[in-house]
Every structure is written in structure tokens, then in C-alpha cells.
Amino acid sequence: MHSRITDAIALKSSPVAVLLTDDKPEAATQFKEGRMGCVAAMLLAAAKGRIVVFDRKTFGCPGGGTGLGFGDCYPGFPIDRLLSTGGQATLASGRPYDMGEGERFHTSPQVSEKWVRSLPYRDVPTEYIVFKPLQQVTEQEQVSLIIMLVNPDQLSALVTLAGFRSGAIHAALSPWGAACQSILFAHAEADKETPSGVIGFFDISQRDKVDREILSFTMPYRLFLQMESDAEESFLRTEAWRKLRERQ
Image 1 (cartoon, helix red, strand yellow):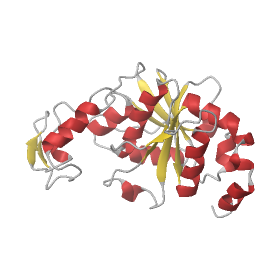
Image 2 (cartoon, one colour; image 1 turned 90 degrees about the horizontal axis):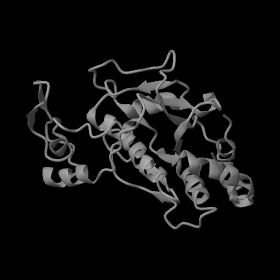
Image 3 (cartoon, helix red, strand yellow; image 1 turned 180 degrees about the horizontal axis):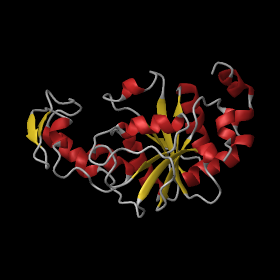
């Protein structure tokens, strides 16, 4: 699938399509069952051309499983303390877990618990969630979300284009969560009559995986298609944007 937006904003990496499917793609990269791993790292692999697959036994970590949309994967995991003050814990498997001083994203476990309760949990109806470079997606595949990794100029273009037709003030949201959890927030946006794009990759513990200028922009597929159809008649044809595109 070709994207006009990709060309117009001179995107350097591939847009990543998030697919909900019961069919496991061949030769896809997948975490081993029971092994820890980072969904954000898999997203970056997909942006470089690889196909990645997850299921309910191979989502890498509780935050990743939750962020992908496999329900609330935090029970039995001390997420409230990991995000705040840290310390020692015993996991549901019986394995001791040393969180050190914690990530210090919240002032206390109680604040972290408040954040946990506020998440828009989703349990997707399919066996697999797939990350696939957009140009490899076929017309027969059902796309749920599109993720782009962008610099500030490109992000400015996407936020502006997201509101081109609706005139929405909140054309984009910037909720805090793990680097992969923009996926969860974008699933929630997909249910709305006028969905917003989701700006992400604010997770301090994962920021070193991307260049310092890079953030993510995640769109419900319906919003992405609208933006694609609007691209040609939008500001992307103006001299103001051409000046910015030349410095990409």
C-alpha cells in the first residue's frame, strides 16, 4: 500500500500498520514464550521493514501486552511500584524482582495505581496482533492503526492534517504511557465519531531507542485514510510546507 503522506512529508522510515488477525504471518519476528522483551523495539524493527507478530503468550512485558490491547496484563506485576518508588517484589511466577529506586515517573505507588485504573483497556478479538510495514500490506488485510515515527516538522504536518477536514481543536492527543501504549490510546480513539491522532514515545526509559528528535504519531486507520485523501488539497502543496520539506 502506497502512502501520499509518506512522500509529502519525506518520512525516512516506513509507516507501520497494526493488523488484528487470526492468521499468523510466515517468517515473522516474535518474542519467545515467557521471555521479556520490548514492544517499542519491535515497532522500530517494523519501521525498518520487518514483520512482527504478538499473541497473548508473547507480548514481551505486562506494559507491552496492555499497550497492544491484550487486556489488563498488570495483575501479579508491581507496576505501581515500578513506575514510582521501586523496591523488592516477588512476581506471580515466584521470581524475585529488584526494581531498585523505581522509574520515578510518579511520586508514589498510589499515583501510579490511579494511572493504571485510568487506562482505556481493550481486549482485541483476534489471536494475533501484527506490525507490518505499510508498503507490504495487501488490500485483503484488515488494518486497525497506522504508526509513523516523525521529527517535529513532520509531526506538525500530521497534527495539522488530522484537523484539516474536521476543524477539531484536539486533532491530536498526547497521553502519557509506555512507548508502545499509544497503540492502546489509538484503539480508544478509533471508537469515536471524530478520532484524534495520538502523539507518543514519551517513555523516558525507552527514549534512547530513537533519535532525540523522533516521536510517534498513531492514527486509527479511518483517520489515516481521511488524511491520505486530504493530503493533495491541503497545505502540503504550499510554499510554506515546501520550505520545511527541503530541510528534512
